[in-house]
Image 1 (cartoon, rainbow, N blue to C red):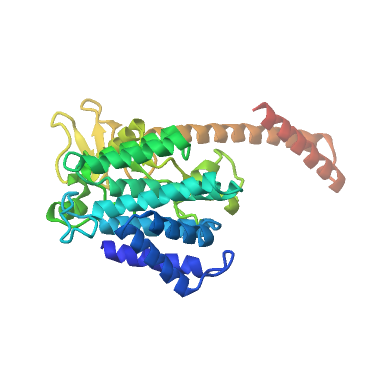
Image 2 (cartoon, helix red, strand yellow; image 1 turned 135 degrees about the horizontal axis):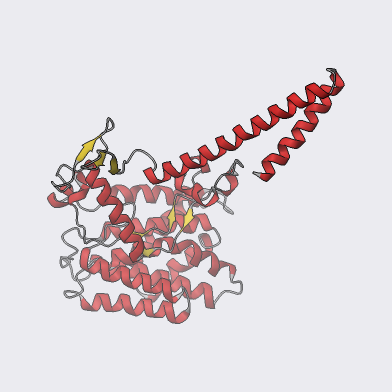
Length: 391
């Protein structure tokens, strides 16, 4: 599966390079990029790093879309290099060829050289801002896949990654809080492994069982926040519905502008503890609704409605006192909306009675004519507006 994702990422990278952004790149030059990158992975020498970096600075850094495509390709490449057997890296059959973990470290070294060059050796700061902001969503995957090896078995490898993160923090490439997120990613990847966002880990028997039954998966695995919720290149109507949440105004009929619906931005890395607790509570409720086992105490009277939702009844009165469904809003929210609707209906009925009395008074005091009816309508409308304001 990793080779499949790598082929897709390679095709996407070629398509991004051939777009006029600002000028299209020939296929031969794209082939040269892969040759330079392969040489850098095989031998991380200053010459190979400089040649690969020069190609990227010339053809990729000016374009945010090309940086995004390059980041996705590097992530897929790093994951394809990882060994699936419990995060362990077997020795290379040839001493001249570097190991998989060493190649993944070379990807980070190349990225570090790009960050250093764009910040300290370019006259304009726009390239540095574009690179750091666009490549950030992929750093968690790059660092996580490079650190998915046992820290006790490979302490030097993890030491190099930690030293690299110290350099990033010292040079101010990213905020210390984000670098700390990357350190937490390294720790979690060393303990639990890392399959990479948007990729599939090796399908061993336990992993296959976890896929078929997600409630039996590894509950100790860390929760990792993505950099974005939704693809920035996707039209607004194909984005997840959650991207509309920041623009929803309660009790407002103003439509949401499509230009405002964009992917949500997050700080990539391990999720906060409060969010993890909320997700676990939600999944526990879902497991109680759709799980195969009996999750309820035998002393509680449990019933099910026609939709299969559990309802808790009072043992004396028989009235429902608890139970939430997965098919809509909570009962507390529904009761709140019902009280609000009853309040509006009561106000509208009082308003109708008052208008009816005013109409009767107008008909008794004035003769029926088109002009009087018009005046009465205007007066009633003004009085109705006054009643609504008072209510």
